[in-house]
Length: 286
Image (tube, rainbow, N blue to C red; front, side, top):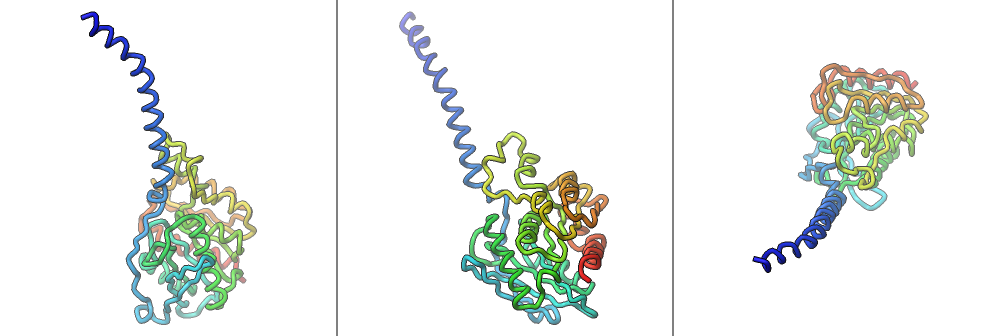
């Protein structure tokens, strides 16, 4: 009895020490997992090849982009229909889209007289590579370079169009190669702020490898900016989109689409979105 009791008491200090150590190790492993696998919850690439556009849409052509780090990426160029505007729209997709998904957007824009370049990021649409902030920035540079050098649309006759995570891509490109105008659909202020909204108990800021400082980019841009967002967006809080609009050095319009969520069709190719592009281009390109 006495020996058994002494054994139990002697075990207590070890439990008191081991338990906190185990918790610290578990927390460290959790943090390490978040750091290591974070891009799997930021990007959702479909790596299946996208079929050619040539022959599917009148006048459209397949374009190969060449990035500064040696990748070859697929893209589609769709020329304006009818009386063209001599203005192009360069589309930077969201984190789960490819150019096939954005064909309805492109066709709605070409019907308004715009030429459109749709491209897929690395890791998307059958492209090589894996997505990251720096990688997507390189992909966007390659798209802009092809649009200017091969297709005849310099930045001053181009509207950059970014959606969701593409707002980070498009706004960075706009700072590097200023366009005629920038349209951001469902922008967040920066990725850390968006992460804190969705994961309030995780120290998101220090762990992030990709940051996408959209509001900071917009504040540094000397070009008109339009922000379009859904009032019922549960992915990117509308207040973040409003803060991006408020940070613009040269704001043009803020369009709140009533009742719209992040992935509702009205925010992909709806009338209010297309009208916002038209109004912005009419204001910016003379």
